[in-house]
Structure formats: structure tokens, C-alpha cells
Length: 190
Length: 318
Image (cartoon, rainbow over all chains, first blue to last red; front, side, top):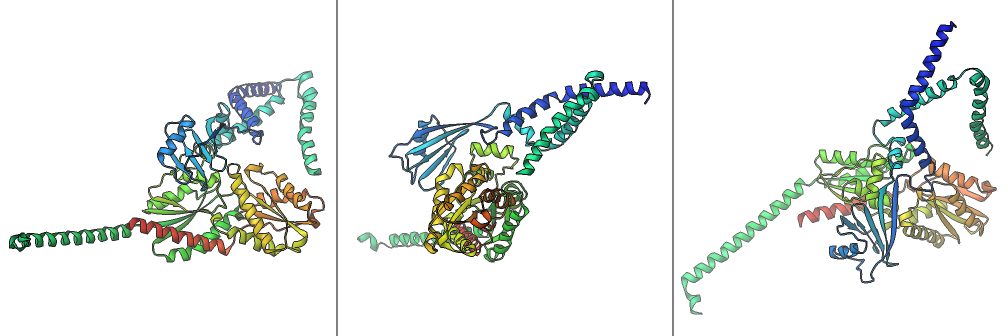
């Protein structure tokens, strides 16, 4: 290869790595944050902050056939003034719906749970993108994935010499590749 | 009394009586005509709603149910169409079907949820999707899961769930008897989807099913556990339920209490739960089947639809 062409290619590689990296830096961070959140989906709700408060229900409450006025006075216990609708999941339970909350009460225990739902800031928005909850976003996501490969490959050839890919980088790359290999081996042996 | 003999008075009274009769007759005729008109303009459809699944096998079981009941339901001249909708994952969704019913001019839609017992799906999600409720958590979840919400023009009528009958007890008994080798030496492990919000109701349903099998066979022990979201889709819950009965009996019959066959549940989750049992090929009896197909479920759908059609037509007339 001609030295001038090699120089041009090297420059193109560095510029591509730098500018594509700048461009996608926000998305990379968003996807990483969402990755943390969704990785631990069994341990927490990555999208919503659900606050549950236990409440006691007066024994006089008519579970069988509550009227709107009964529901109104029940709502005051949890500080709500306007209910939207109420319904009975079972004959001895009543569920009342408010704008951003519900109150689910049980006759057996004369108790209930007041549940407020709030979006988890930053994570909710990050997850919307990571999970492709927005129609059409998957195409952006595909382009992003392609350019992540570009960033990775161009990154291998940014430096040259003693700390370049051939001398140093290759060993780090092989060490990193061991992680999935070990995982596959463990999975295969199971 | 003297005024009764007054001719003018009598004529006046007679006139009033005739007028009253005419008015009443005319009103009654008018009412009958309105009733007939309402009856004529009434167009009822049936929507069989199920949870939905990525599995084509699962979806086929539900569309097969639709095909089986369709003919009988449509013999009832009050009902003009029967469709199936999937709540999640695939089309046709509930919104798609409701839009189709609206554009076809249906006035009433009987929604039959093919769900075992009360859960957030049947009690909150479906009513929120069709716009009869606004459960805050459902609203948010529907949005991020890209499930469309559509408030139909047609009046919607949601029927009770399968647990209002003894169909499930009979179904599990039949399926247990089909694979049981020796009831005396077996324990029954029931694996159902479960629901965190209605754990008591799901537990009661499993107890009722287990007790029914005990009452009708020589089986003496059963256990149950969940394989759905409440169990994080983890096979460990299945293993726990199997070990529970294996502590008392030499072998366990594992029974999926699931509407239809989904590879992720019957094969992966329950299958992996069984594989975790040592010597499972000798200790565990398992057939990865499901509640459907079941003649009783088909009959129940037909009968619940007829009951609701009666209710709708009589309500309109009244």
C-alpha cells in the first residue's frame, strides 16, 4: 500500500472513530443506563416508582354494595378527593381508581393498599428507547448498533507503534474475548 | 249523585275515558315500535380475548376455540360476528378488533376473556384497553408495551371468567387421569401462571382444583406454584412444587394449569424445573399439555355468550 494512501486511511479511521463516537455518545450512555436497569428487572421496577401505603378500612364499610358516597368517604382516608371509577374484583374486594393511584381494599382483613404510580425519571425515558417502545425507533436502534461496530473496529486502529493494536491491543482484545468464550463453555457444560 | 244524571257530565266523562284509552294504546304502540326499532338496530358481536403469546402453537389453540364455537354462536340470530383478539404481542389486538366492530356498525360487543381467574390482565388491563377504566399502572404499561388503547363506540359487556364454573376442576381431573399410573403413589404438582395482586384467589383456585382431584381419585397430596411474572418466569418454582410432593410420595405428576401450550412455559420453564429434579425420568410424570382443547370450555363460551345476549336484548327492551 502506498504510504500516502495508508496515511489517508489512517486519518479517515481516526476521524470516523472520533466523530461517530461524539455523535453516539449520548445514546451509548442512555443504552448503558437502561442496560443496568433492565438487567435487574427481577429486583426492581425499572420503569415506575410504585409507592404502596397500607390503610385500615372501617368495619362499617359496605363491601357488598358500596355507593359513590361511600367511595368518596373512603377516598378521604388516602387524601383523594375525586375517584374516576370503582369496581369489585371479587365479592369481598373493592378497587377504586384515581388519576395516578388506586386503592384496593379487602373485607377479610379490613385493610387496603393505596398504590401510587410515578415514572422513574431518566430510567423510564432510557427504557422507552432501549425497548423500542416508540414505533419506528428500531431502525434508529439498528443504525446505532451498526455504528457501535464501526466505533469498535475503528478504535482498534487509532494508535500505532508500541501501544497500537499489533503490539498491545491484540492481547487486550483476546483477553476480552475470553469472557464470552468462558460463558459459552459454562453454559454448554450445564 | 244528581250530577251523574247530568247528560253533559256523562258525555264529558266518556270523552275523557276514550281519550285516555286512545293515549294509552297509542303510547303502548309507540313503545312497542321503539322497542322493535331498537331491537332491529341492535347489532351484537362477540370478541374472545386471550392473553396473547409469541408462540404460534398457543395462538392456534385460541383460534381453534374460535372456529369451534363460531358456528353455534352464530346460530343465535341476535349475534352477527365472532372474532378473537390477542391482548399482547401479536395482531389482531383488542383495539384492532374493536375498530373493525365499530366500522361494521355494531352496537354491542360481548367480550369473553379466556382467562382462568381474576388477574391484573382481566380486571385492569382489558377494561383499560377498551376505555371503560383508567388504571394508572395499566395505562403506563400499555404505553411502553405498545398496546393500543381504543375507546369503542359500541357498548362493551365483559363476561365472568372461567373460574366461575367447575370447568377447571373437571379439566385437571381428566388430564390427571389420562397420565396417572398409580394415584396412591403419586403427588400432583399444579403449575399455573399466578398473579401477585390476586395471590389469594389463585391459591384458592389451585386448592379447589387439587381437592377435586383428591376427591375423585386415590391421590392424597398436591402442591402448586407459579411460572408467570410473579415467579420471574423461573423454573425454580416448578422444582419447589415437585419436591414438595416428592417428600411424601415416590412420584410426582406435573400438570400445567395454563390455557394453551406455549413452548416457553410448558417446555422451557416447567421442563427446566422438572430437569432439575434428580432421577426425574423415573420420578416425574409430565405431559406438556394445556387446558385447551376442552369441550366444556367451548360449551361455556357458547352459554356465557347466550346469557349476555339475553341480558343485552332484554335490557334494551326494558
